Length: 272
Image (cartoon, rainbow, N blue to C red; front, side, top):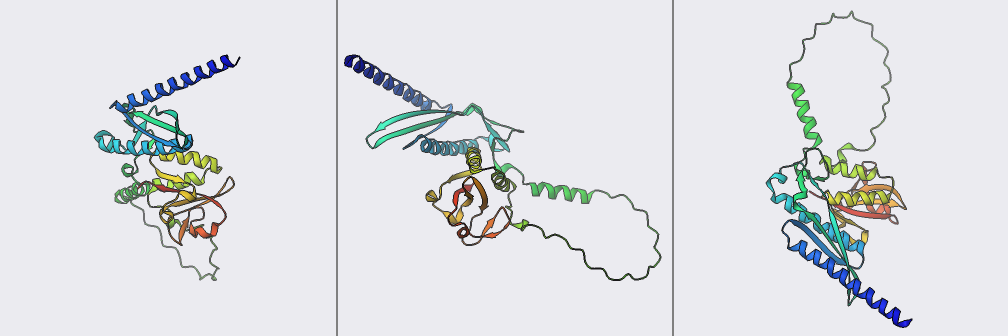
Protein backbone atom coordinates (compact mmCIF):
# COMPACT_ATOMS: atom_id res chain seq x y z
CA UNK A 1 0.00 0.00 0.00
CA UNK A 2 2.80 2.37 0.94
CA UNK A 3 4.54 1.57 -2.35
CA UNK A 4 1.41 2.52 -4.30
CA UNK A 5 1.09 5.78 -2.36
CA UNK A 6 4.73 6.61 -3.02
CA UNK A 7 4.27 5.89 -6.73
CA UNK A 8 1.16 8.11 -6.84
CA UNK A 9 3.00 10.91 -5.07
CA UNK A 10 5.87 10.70 -7.55
CA UNK A 11 3.46 10.76 -10.49
CA UNK A 12 1.72 13.84 -9.07
CA UNK A 13 5.06 15.59 -8.53
CA UNK A 14 6.17 14.81 -12.09
CA UNK A 15 2.81 16.03 -13.47
CA UNK A 16 3.06 19.28 -11.48
CA UNK A 17 6.61 19.88 -12.69
CA UNK A 18 5.59 19.20 -16.30
CA UNK A 19 2.65 21.61 -15.98
CA UNK A 20 4.90 24.31 -14.51
CA UNK A 21 7.37 23.84 -17.37
CA UNK A 22 4.51 24.03 -19.87
CA UNK A 23 3.22 27.34 -18.45
CA UNK A 24 6.76 28.70 -18.19
CA UNK A 25 7.37 27.82 -21.85
CA UNK A 26 4.16 29.60 -22.88
CA UNK A 27 5.24 32.70 -20.97
CA UNK A 28 8.71 32.70 -22.54
CA UNK A 29 7.27 32.21 -26.03
CA UNK A 30 4.91 35.16 -25.57
CA UNK A 31 7.68 37.39 -24.16
CA UNK A 32 9.88 36.65 -27.18
CA UNK A 33 7.02 37.30 -29.60
CA UNK A 34 6.89 40.93 -30.75
CA UNK A 35 3.13 40.70 -31.33
CA UNK A 36 2.30 40.93 -27.62
CA UNK A 37 2.45 43.48 -24.79
CA UNK A 38 3.11 41.75 -21.47
CA UNK A 39 3.94 42.28 -17.81
CA UNK A 40 4.51 40.03 -14.82
CA UNK A 41 5.02 40.11 -11.07
CA UNK A 42 5.92 37.63 -8.32
CA UNK A 43 4.47 38.32 -4.88
CA UNK A 44 3.40 36.55 -1.68
CA UNK A 45 -0.20 36.12 -2.86
CA UNK A 46 -1.89 35.79 -6.24
CA UNK A 47 -4.00 38.92 -5.58
CA UNK A 48 -0.89 41.02 -4.88
CA UNK A 49 0.93 39.66 -7.91
CA UNK A 50 -2.07 40.25 -10.17
CA UNK A 51 -2.46 43.84 -8.91
CA UNK A 52 1.18 44.70 -9.60
CA UNK A 53 1.23 42.90 -12.96
CA UNK A 54 -1.96 44.65 -14.06
CA UNK A 55 -0.53 48.04 -13.08
CA UNK A 56 2.63 47.34 -15.08
CA UNK A 57 0.58 46.13 -18.05
CA UNK A 58 -1.53 49.30 -17.97
CA UNK A 59 1.67 51.36 -18.08
CA UNK A 60 2.96 49.29 -21.02
CA UNK A 61 -0.35 49.82 -22.85
CA UNK A 62 -0.21 53.56 -22.18
CA UNK A 63 3.29 53.77 -23.65
CA UNK A 64 2.32 51.63 -26.66
CA UNK A 65 -0.75 53.79 -27.42
CA UNK A 66 1.40 56.92 -27.17
CA UNK A 67 3.80 55.53 -29.77
CA UNK A 68 1.11 54.68 -32.35
CA UNK A 69 -0.05 57.64 -34.47
CA UNK A 70 -3.47 56.16 -35.25
CA UNK A 71 -4.13 55.36 -31.58
CA UNK A 72 -2.57 58.51 -30.16
CA UNK A 73 -5.13 60.77 -31.84
CA UNK A 74 -8.15 58.62 -30.99
CA UNK A 75 -10.35 59.85 -28.10
CA UNK A 76 -11.00 56.24 -27.06
CA UNK A 77 -9.07 53.00 -27.40
CA UNK A 78 -10.48 49.54 -26.84
CA UNK A 79 -8.40 46.58 -25.65
CA UNK A 80 -9.87 43.21 -26.65
CA UNK A 81 -9.15 39.73 -25.37
CA UNK A 82 -7.09 40.60 -22.29
CA UNK A 83 -5.74 37.26 -21.11
CA UNK A 84 -3.67 36.14 -18.12
CA UNK A 85 -1.44 33.23 -17.17
CA UNK A 86 -0.58 32.43 -13.57
CA UNK A 87 2.19 30.18 -12.36
CA UNK A 88 3.03 29.30 -8.75
CA UNK A 89 6.71 29.05 -7.94
CA UNK A 90 8.29 27.55 -4.81
CA UNK A 91 11.11 29.74 -3.62
CA UNK A 92 13.55 29.59 -0.71
CA UNK A 93 11.78 32.44 1.12
CA UNK A 94 8.44 30.66 0.98
CA UNK A 95 5.63 29.98 -1.49
CA UNK A 96 5.34 32.77 -4.05
CA UNK A 97 2.89 33.33 -6.90
CA UNK A 98 3.90 34.52 -10.34
CA UNK A 99 1.26 36.21 -12.51
CA UNK A 100 1.87 36.90 -16.17
CA UNK A 101 -0.54 39.12 -18.17
CA UNK A 102 -0.45 39.74 -21.89
CA UNK A 103 -2.40 41.48 -24.67
CA UNK A 104 -2.15 41.11 -28.44
CA UNK A 105 -1.04 44.36 -30.08
CA UNK A 106 -3.54 43.73 -32.87
CA UNK A 107 -6.33 43.78 -30.25
CA UNK A 108 -5.51 47.37 -29.23
CA UNK A 109 -7.65 49.40 -31.63
CA UNK A 110 -9.15 52.89 -31.89
CA UNK A 111 -12.85 53.09 -31.03
CA UNK A 112 -15.19 55.98 -31.80
CA UNK A 113 -18.17 54.95 -29.71
CA UNK A 114 -16.78 52.46 -27.20
CA UNK A 115 -15.56 53.75 -23.85
CA UNK A 116 -13.20 51.10 -22.59
CA UNK A 117 -9.74 52.58 -22.48
CA UNK A 118 -10.09 56.38 -22.26
CA UNK A 119 -7.43 58.93 -23.14
CA UNK A 120 -8.55 61.97 -21.10
CA UNK A 121 -6.13 64.37 -22.81
CA UNK A 122 -7.91 63.77 -26.15
CA UNK A 123 -11.48 63.99 -24.76
CA UNK A 124 -12.94 67.54 -24.88
CA UNK A 125 -14.18 68.81 -21.53
CA UNK A 126 -17.94 69.25 -21.15
CA UNK A 127 -17.48 72.88 -20.13
CA UNK A 128 -15.63 73.65 -23.39
CA UNK A 129 -18.41 72.11 -25.49
CA UNK A 130 -21.09 74.00 -23.56
CA UNK A 131 -19.17 77.29 -23.93
CA UNK A 132 -18.82 76.75 -27.69
CA UNK A 133 -22.57 76.13 -28.05
CA UNK A 134 -23.34 79.25 -26.02
CA UNK A 135 -21.07 81.38 -28.23
CA UNK A 136 -22.72 79.97 -31.37
CA UNK A 137 -26.19 80.80 -30.06
CA UNK A 138 -25.10 84.39 -29.29
CA UNK A 139 -23.71 84.93 -32.78
CA UNK A 140 -26.86 83.56 -34.50
CA UNK A 141 -29.31 86.22 -35.82
CA UNK A 142 -32.19 86.88 -33.45
CA UNK A 143 -35.82 87.35 -34.67
CA UNK A 144 -37.19 90.88 -34.58
CA UNK A 145 -39.52 91.61 -31.64
CA UNK A 146 -42.55 93.85 -32.20
CA UNK A 147 -42.69 96.89 -29.89
CA UNK A 148 -45.10 96.50 -26.98
CA UNK A 149 -47.59 99.24 -26.04
CA UNK A 150 -46.62 101.33 -23.06
CA UNK A 151 -48.73 100.45 -20.04
CA UNK A 152 -50.55 103.13 -18.14
CA UNK A 153 -48.83 104.19 -14.91
CA UNK A 154 -49.99 102.21 -11.88
CA UNK A 155 -50.08 103.39 -8.30
CA UNK A 156 -47.10 102.41 -6.23
CA UNK A 157 -47.63 99.08 -4.49
CA UNK A 158 -46.81 98.52 -0.87
CA UNK A 159 -43.37 96.96 -0.41
CA UNK A 160 -43.39 93.14 -0.26
CA UNK A 161 -40.82 90.98 1.56
CA UNK A 162 -38.16 89.45 -0.69
CA UNK A 163 -38.91 85.82 -1.62
CA UNK A 164 -36.99 83.21 0.36
CA UNK A 165 -34.87 80.91 -1.84
CA UNK A 166 -33.17 77.70 -0.78
CA UNK A 167 -29.39 77.96 -0.50
CA UNK A 168 -27.43 76.02 -3.10
CA UNK A 169 -26.09 72.85 -1.52
CA UNK A 170 -22.31 72.97 -1.52
CA UNK A 171 -19.89 75.11 -3.50
CA UNK A 172 -20.01 74.05 -7.17
CA UNK A 173 -16.65 75.74 -7.79
CA UNK A 174 -15.04 72.95 -5.73
CA UNK A 175 -15.83 70.41 -8.44
CA UNK A 176 -12.82 69.28 -10.50
CA UNK A 177 -12.05 71.33 -13.61
CA UNK A 178 -11.50 68.28 -15.79
CA UNK A 179 -14.92 66.79 -16.51
CA UNK A 180 -13.66 63.20 -16.84
CA UNK A 181 -11.95 63.41 -13.42
CA UNK A 182 -15.15 64.69 -11.79
CA UNK A 183 -17.00 61.82 -13.45
CA UNK A 184 -14.58 59.39 -11.78
CA UNK A 185 -15.46 60.91 -8.39
CA UNK A 186 -19.20 60.89 -9.13
CA UNK A 187 -19.11 57.26 -10.29
CA UNK A 188 -17.30 56.14 -7.13
CA UNK A 189 -19.68 58.07 -4.86
CA UNK A 190 -22.61 56.44 -6.68
CA UNK A 191 -21.41 52.94 -5.75
CA UNK A 192 -23.75 51.07 -3.42
CA UNK A 193 -20.91 49.85 -1.21
CA UNK A 194 -17.12 49.60 -0.88
CA UNK A 195 -16.97 46.22 -2.62
CA UNK A 196 -18.53 47.76 -5.72
CA UNK A 197 -16.19 50.77 -5.45
CA UNK A 198 -13.11 48.50 -5.32
CA UNK A 199 -14.26 46.67 -8.45
CA UNK A 200 -14.86 49.99 -10.20
CA UNK A 201 -11.42 51.27 -9.15
CA UNK A 202 -9.83 48.15 -10.61
CA UNK A 203 -11.63 48.75 -13.91
CA UNK A 204 -10.73 52.47 -13.88
CA UNK A 205 -7.07 51.62 -13.43
CA UNK A 206 -7.23 49.26 -16.41
CA UNK A 207 -8.74 52.18 -18.36
CA UNK A 208 -5.83 54.39 -17.18
CA UNK A 209 -8.17 56.75 -15.35
CA UNK A 210 -6.58 55.83 -12.00
CA UNK A 211 -2.83 55.48 -11.62
CA UNK A 212 -2.93 53.41 -8.44
CA UNK A 213 -4.86 52.88 -5.21
CA UNK A 214 -4.51 50.97 -1.96
CA UNK A 215 -4.88 50.83 1.81
CA UNK A 216 -3.65 53.78 3.95
CA UNK A 217 -0.46 52.00 5.02
CA UNK A 218 0.69 51.77 1.37
CA UNK A 219 0.21 55.48 0.57
CA UNK A 220 3.56 57.18 -0.13
CA UNK A 221 2.16 60.69 -0.69
CA UNK A 222 -1.04 61.32 1.34
CA UNK A 223 -1.11 65.05 0.49
CA UNK A 224 -1.41 64.43 -3.27
CA UNK A 225 -3.89 61.56 -2.96
CA UNK A 226 -7.68 61.36 -3.01
CA UNK A 227 -9.25 59.50 -0.09
CA UNK A 228 -12.41 57.40 -0.25
CA UNK A 229 -13.74 57.27 3.34
CA UNK A 230 -16.03 54.43 4.39
CA UNK A 231 -17.48 52.75 7.47
CA UNK A 232 -17.99 49.03 7.08
CA UNK A 233 -19.48 48.76 3.59
CA UNK A 234 -21.02 52.25 3.57
CA UNK A 235 -19.22 54.93 1.55
CA UNK A 236 -19.16 58.21 3.49
CA UNK A 237 -17.39 60.59 1.10
CA UNK A 238 -14.30 61.25 -1.01
CA UNK A 239 -11.76 63.89 0.05
CA UNK A 240 -9.53 65.59 -2.50
CA UNK A 241 -5.76 66.19 -2.25
CA UNK A 242 -4.47 68.79 0.20
CA UNK A 243 -2.94 69.32 3.62
CA UNK A 244 -5.48 70.64 6.13
CA UNK A 245 -8.09 71.90 3.65
CA UNK A 246 -9.49 69.25 1.35
CA UNK A 247 -12.59 69.20 -0.84
CA UNK A 248 -15.39 66.98 0.46
CA UNK A 249 -16.89 65.82 -2.85
CA UNK A 250 -20.07 64.52 -1.19
CA UNK A 251 -21.08 67.87 0.32
CA UNK A 252 -18.83 70.14 -1.82
CA UNK A 253 -17.44 71.82 1.28
CA UNK A 254 -13.97 72.22 2.78
CA UNK A 255 -13.10 69.31 5.05
CA UNK A 256 -10.16 67.73 6.87
CA UNK A 257 -8.91 64.15 6.79
CA UNK A 258 -8.52 64.28 10.58
CA UNK A 259 -12.30 64.54 10.92
CA UNK A 260 -12.54 60.89 9.87
CA UNK A 261 -10.11 59.45 12.38
CA UNK A 262 -11.11 55.85 13.13
CA UNK A 263 -12.86 55.36 9.77
CA UNK A 264 -11.59 53.09 7.02
CA UNK A 265 -10.16 54.58 3.82
CA UNK A 266 -8.76 53.82 0.37
CA UNK A 267 -6.35 56.27 -1.22
CA UNK A 268 -6.05 56.73 -4.98
CA UNK A 269 -4.42 58.98 -7.57
CA UNK A 270 -5.73 59.91 -11.01
CA UNK A 271 -4.05 60.25 -14.38
CA UNK A 272 -3.24 63.80 -15.50
